[in-house]
Length: 580
Image 1 (spheres, rainbow, N blue to C red):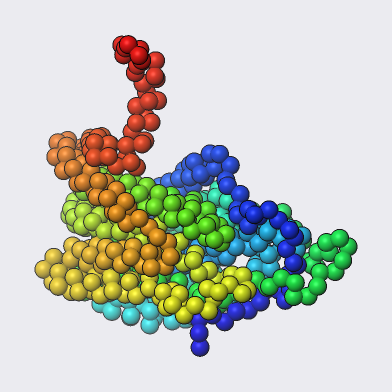
Image 2: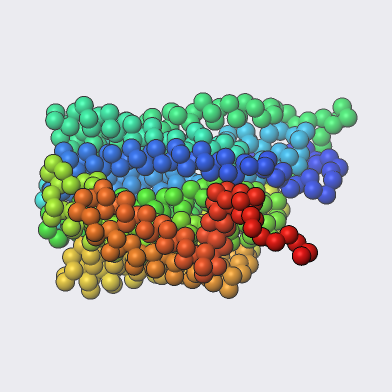
């Protein structure tokens, strides 16, 4: 059995009309499109993250870090696994390139049936069926799932109850991921960026109103409600985009003549191409499983400390991932049109910009972790001891954040080179070497997991949660290094010397900023003042060092800000005229 088992979405499609040479090339986005799309995505994602942080603050305030929160966080593994698989990663990796290709074909053959509608008819019904089965399976297998994930849990019955509730998220998560991928491929970013706002509004509504009545179960019920809200938010925008396309009826009749059967090859679906994508996403998420498994044998509250630390740490990574979330449809359409040079240039730029953002966030967390945790969490049942433990884990986690962000950038074009939908007759469909490379990311992730387990087993007996965090950072960094090499093997000829040289400058700037920000954050006793002073020091030091070291991702924005603050008439005042 091979990976490629093509299924035609339509038996015949109309022959292409004569077109200019650039007919298959997607039109360039209008001026300012990327900036506007990133701005909208950033604002709504920041709102979703802020509400998610408020959710975590309320969990800490109402329930602290104990066996009850540990039980909920084990149940949280279901939506925590389903979200990257069905919303953020696997579904996006599969369906954004698929819809991008359908849009390219729509541009190449404007008189034919709409490939977008054909794609929806061929994929959505089967997806709904599979998601329903997965949701029921997770609910029925909740006792076995809890035993597998956390065998040493203090309250397994509560974890089973919460797991059965959160299993309801699988279906709406999958629908939301599918609709979001379609909308982003159409360069519609507003509704997809708002899904986590809807999700967390649902959680907060139930948590605020029912925490005293249902305890930690209220958080699980809120998760289920929030997943329904996020899917509902995307239905209307998706239907509007679908109706805006051409009718998917009978083939067009150019010049009044029937299009002959077989005039153009069918668009084909490769169902088993999703297996390498799913394998990569699940093995990546397995880092969380390893932490929960090893953490369940540590003192109660350890899993909660790891969870709170991960949530804070991921805020820096989320900002970096927003960049490639906006640019991914552009990369996918360039690859669908065969423009590898444009795709390479875009990926190199994304790698640099994501590294700059995440390294600035990493420097901030290294310098200000204790004050940030105290400011956010230290109230109610969350005490000073919890603050110290969580802050220490954050500092160790931070060393793996750059690798997490870079993997998020690299994996999108990697899987776009072999999408789940492609043109019939594409020679790449039968290339055995390419099929083998499909599994490279999953293999790289497995190798990283081996490193994670090895470091965790060696370090946990002595260092506890810090050992688990160190294993996480070491494993994900190993995977990122392997994937960087794999992207070159895949066919995107990154200029590694240029990319790695730029990252070295950014890394040096971040190290210097963290070294200067740490003592500054330690001066005030008040957590708010400490965070502000430390953060300002880190930002200024990163800007100055990055500019001085020649990091273009820092130098460009800094010089632009200087020019904006100092108009040429002022900056040039006192300079002798040219020619004298």
